[in-house]
Length: 273
Image (cartoon, rainbow, N blue to C red; front, side, top):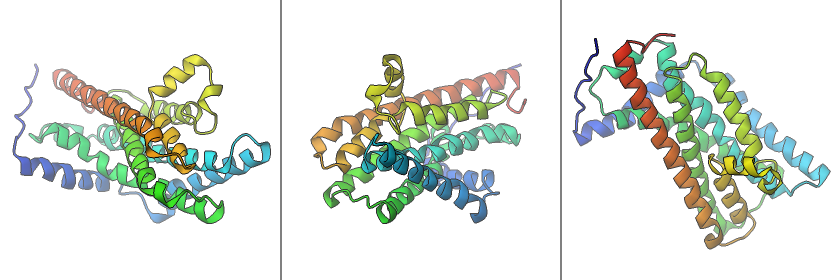
């Protein structure tokens, strides 16, 4: 016997309350186990050593410049929060068997869904900003001051794009038994395919097509143009493409979320592991 969903409220104040306060409370509830002793090695130390490793490897082999690897890796590390954090923010509700009470509420689903991405987005921005800061202090990374505002905008859009991609993976986790294998494959596939360490032109044609459908690819390319002194006109099309890719993944994520919610109501499988 199917159960009809409760009506959604259309009140604007309730929308923003669910978006901001609900997103923050859910983040604190799902990530209550995080302490500085866990957060710093995972979200700051590991990305830092990734940047240092590839920069010095690139210098030693002559594969790419310092700017190439600093920009690529500093932007890429935001995907750690976007993919893993967003996957946990959605899929863990099922693992903790709290999904049914949440979906029984009349809360606006868009606010409920997107609000969970806001703290994840902030965490990704913090990680990338830390990568750029340490690169400036240790690796003498010095982009032109005039490029910094647009570089910051590029990082913001790219981080949001990765968060949308993580939402799609998290939505799949509402039904999949083990979403972490998929999340791990996605993370390292993006490291390989999105031009982080290997220029896109060196990839096979089919993989280049896949790369253009993923987050990071256009954002990293735009960031490199801005960091090497190119004007906004050269980077702007890539920034827009990154924005479109992120919006597409967020739309796919919400459609998957809505579909699995309907299926869960019909089959009573919200908390079935």
